[in-house]
Length: 194
Image (tube, rainbow, N blue to C red; front, side, top):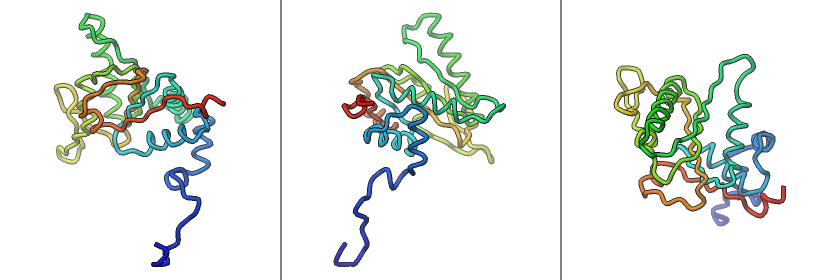
């Protein structure tokens, strides 16, 4: 590079390329710790093309995402986010009702372009959510559509899905790693200093 006389910045970093100081300060105000690893995790979470899956045993990333979603709305405007808790899959009547409720909220959010935070993901990804991770968007006329559940739903470009798990060492299928952006939000020693 030097022989070709290409200028190289001496202080280049992931933060400097993919975010700004004001954006990082905003994240810190919303509850993100200011250590290097947490900031890089936030950059991966916000800038990736895939939907992120946060490995977050201490709920540090989850709390930041909740605060970020709550502060992103405009005063007087309708809420543009959903925080959903994934029920334990025991095939009981309560599980089926809770799953149906989650699917309805996800369909509405897909249509309106809302953010959705799904808490407490298990080591197995729900089939409906797995369909969303595929991001198999297609056009029907001029409308963008996506298969979700047993039907097609209109897909809004602003839709954003954040998955979180409290499992500290989850064992996901390889397909999950391919379909989603895995972000490890486990607390570091630097993050504990705050």
